[in-house]
Image 1 (tube, helix red, strand yellow):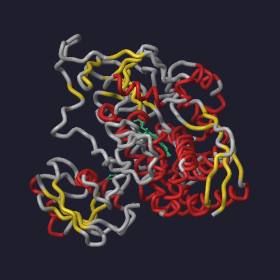
Image 2: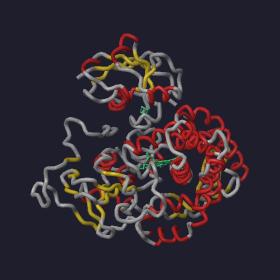
Image 3: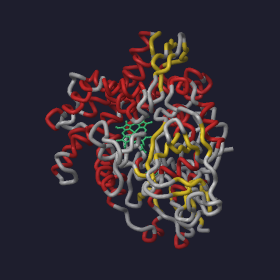
Image 4: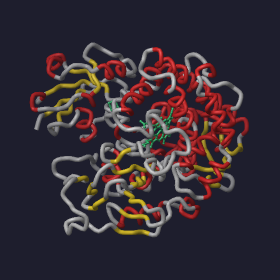
Length: 107
Length: 422
Ligand code: HEM
Ligand code: FES
């Protein structure tokens, strides 16, 4: 099972194991990670699953889709070059060890 | 404490399966027939005991009264919502099967559509109602909520349905749409009609359709480009004609979707939240001590009361739902409200808990048709609950609470309350 580390805004880190094929957003909800809201359940509507991908992983999480790009314009915390919607990141073995930082606010 | 998030995962058997079972195959489970009318007045008066009967009778039941299959447990409702190829919307999301009966109005291009047609229209409305658009609306909606609560504190005692749950959305949504000032009194009757029309041909539906002509005429006119103010949701939909995303014939029908679904739903959502906070003062106290809970307090009210109680799908092929065989061309009724209180999914489901992890509730649906206006609804709900929490010390019910009856929407006709200022 790939493991993912979520680093909260206050630098607290939580490492959890993910099911292959689940999204990073879903993994966070399953483990009760505060800081990811995921109001639309991964439907790419709400932009409340915003994360900052650790730079060393940026090349591996895939590209930002056109719809995701527009949604990222609406995130509550600052959009940065490494901003992603975690419901659009699908976990695979290749992402074992992924590090995602959580923004200050989701709404 | 909190139940796990349920979707198909590796260790639970899939809810849906295909192709295996023949009719009367010994491996499939018998479907329990129930003599329940979920569109009757006595049911509406207190649906929860019957929801429990529906959930406990089996994963799928058959309602003889209307000749439909029904699902009331969370796992099955969620599975049906998330398999639009098997459970289609294009044959109507009410009882009426558009393959056999002419729809009472031209079919919706989004709600009553399947991929790939749905994918295109949905993309347009997603953009019109996007998080970025909500950011721009937020301050105005919040100021209107504050002003409304100030006005209500002057009044002290009033009917929270008319003066709050209806008045607040009416003060923000029609303007956000870009509607003209005249004729807005048609909006709630039109929405009541639309939601009654999803139900069976009972008195509620027939009366609503009989009285519908003026409301339909009003809505048809408001959907035209010339009648929609620049900058509003309506004009933004029409602007998509210029970019080639939709045709000039499609735009008015997409505006109609927002007029149908964008007002009465939030009236009942905000009504539900105020009713919850009035009944559970300890939750209102928690909200007052932590304003950041406002958005979740609204979300939990949507789970708890489920303003939209039901929707239907129609099967496009033979399917087994948790071992129960359902043939092609059958209507399947989804009890969203019963799923939202299924003890298999929710700890202490009868409790209104503003700190609950509400994620996964189906009050806004789930999957590709999940409410496209959910961000508008949450924005209205959040800023209103935040205004109440800052300005009001207590909400007391001071008269008889009366229910409003509709085939799909659950809400109140009257909620007399007294506010004590903070
Ligand atoms: C608390 C308020 C609301 C509730 C409970 C609610 C509930 C729902 C539900 C359950 C669905 C799914 C229908 C299905 O699966 O067949 C839905 C879809 C829809 N809602 Fe909402 N809604 C609310 C507010 C709004 C608002 C404010 C708007 C417009 C601004 C809106 C517009 C729509 C539209 C157009 C659809 C169809 C989406 C599609 O088929 O892709 N709703 N809503
Ligand atoms: S969960 Fe809503 S956009 Fe990711």
